[in-house]
Amino acid sequence: MPLSRRSAVSIVVFVLLGVFVGLGYWHQSRKVTPGQAANSPSIDVTSGEDRGPGSLREAIFKATAGTSEVTIALKVPKITLASTLPPLANAGGIRLVADENGTQIDGSNLPGGAVLDVSGANISIEGVQIHNCKETGIVLRAERFKLQTTSIENCDVGIDVAENADQLLLERNHFAKNRVGVRFAASNKNAMVVKNEFSEHRDAGIWAVRSEPDKRGGAISIRDNRFDKERIGILTANVSLIVERNELLDSREAAMQLMGTGAVARGNRISRGGAMGIVVENGQAAVIEDNEFDGLEAYGVMLKSSADTVIRKNRIHNSGYGLAFVLGNQRSPSSAIDNTIIEPKFNGIDVIGDSPILRGNQVMRPRAWPLKVTDYQPEGGGEKVRSTPFLEGNNFSLNAATVAAGDAKPTAGGVVQR
Image (cartoon, rainbow, N blue to C red; front, side, top):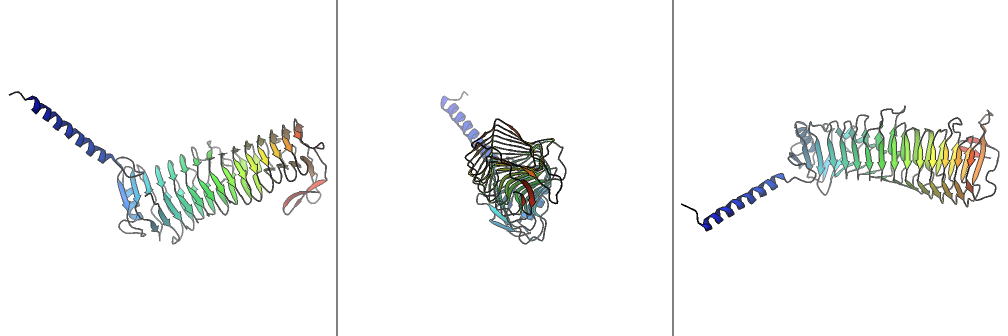
């Protein structure tokens, strides 16, 4: 018996309603909590105790037993640890995510060790606050790690990054009042430190030091960060760093101290502070270019016992001094090219027992000498180290560009001129 037109329309409407209901159920099944991947099982932390049901410890044990990515969702405002947590590791990865109000993990009662031990690949941490740890906030021993919108304060080391921890991203985090904010053991490949805030570290905001040059290739990218009131903002030795577009304010000893090989500092702003802007000491082939320095009590850039370093297109104004070259390698001279130094309180460029290449630099309105060249007399009467800089195309605002003022001699505080 053929269907009437009205019956056919009713059937079509019923089918369409069924389709829409099915799509609704499918959409709900695909929704995930913030920071959680689709189809990723979630384990909620509902207890702030060190152990027991709903604790972070139990969640990590459960996540470690999984074979696919697991999200650990922190649902409590504070977790107080009394003993070391198990390592974070899972074949598919782990996401440790706090809710929008954040969760503080207090490590003050830990006898030692790291608050979080990241020993597996594909781990990410978001929105967590790690405070008051006697040793390390996070020790990182695996690749493909992300840390975002997290704070680490009052620890010995905020994050300790091992040599094998490649492909890491530290983004929009806050590091404060640790001894060291982030410590690198090597030139980790595809490592980025981006848009973080560092403040008031007792030794350095970023510490990247090894005894020998790292020949593995790759460089750590440190860009668009802010460093405030650090003893030393960035300290590196024999670890490849590219330091770009950072702001370093009110450093107590130096905004950057670069030693060994592999350092590039480009496009940074270094302002105020009672000491140096950038110090290159026993450095090799460093590049310092297109940075702005202002309000420093001492030198914008000082090279000590360094070789093949290029200082190019920097702007230094309203500071104590401009540039200094001290006891460099005369067989592999460093260069200062196209730099602008405006109104130094004392000398624009000091050369002490060194023979750099000075080309196309401008020193405007110095209160002392635009260029002062001095031989170095070793303590105890050893052989004098002559200063013979190569000058080409410089623009100094005083008629007398160079003054011979006797020999420079070492003192307890460094090198002074007589």
